[in-house]
Image 1 (cartoon, helix red, strand yellow):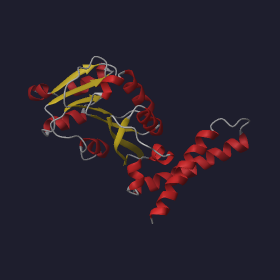
Image 2 (cartoon, rainbow, N blue to C red):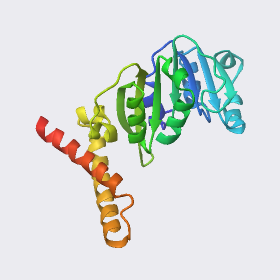
Image 3 (cartoon, rainbow, N blue to C red):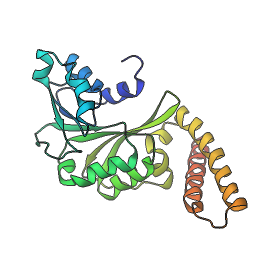
Image 4 (spheres, helix red, strand yellow):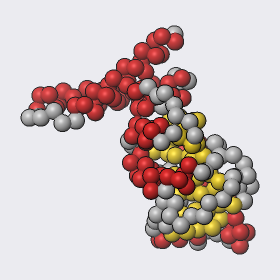
Length: 230
């Protein structure tokens, strides 16, 4: 797992002794690590694709099969609720994660917490979570293979007052003045200024300008907060 920084970041915020559901497990690297290192003794690894899930099943010996169960399903469909249970939903975009949670909202609300990892549309995910009273406990960036990933740890039961900057870039990254975030907003600023200019100069309509302006406003909010704290 030394070359899987993102997966280790996820593993590091899972409490020992939890019953774990890994949604969209694919190769099952997280369940395998949790089982082999004694972090969890009850793991359900699911995937919508039977061939993908078989990659994990082929790696299970008799001892691991006592700990890791597998299930072909879509999201939480058909998953049994247990006490002391947490879920991981990683390797998907924010919109897909929203769909999975929303299809089984009552189930998700009764989990101890969820760990969510996304590299696209995370602002929509944060907004959805806040609207549905999921408290974002952790929210930080990681960087792997040329991509930025947001990792969130969330639990149900508390509405937060999130600013536009928090929605787009995560309160923890801002509060801790994350170096990764500093690099990311430089990239996002240049990219969105270019998009904005292209639309103004070359497009007959202004579709997309509202979203671009919102992100630029969020970037400026981050910069302003950092200035005030200096």
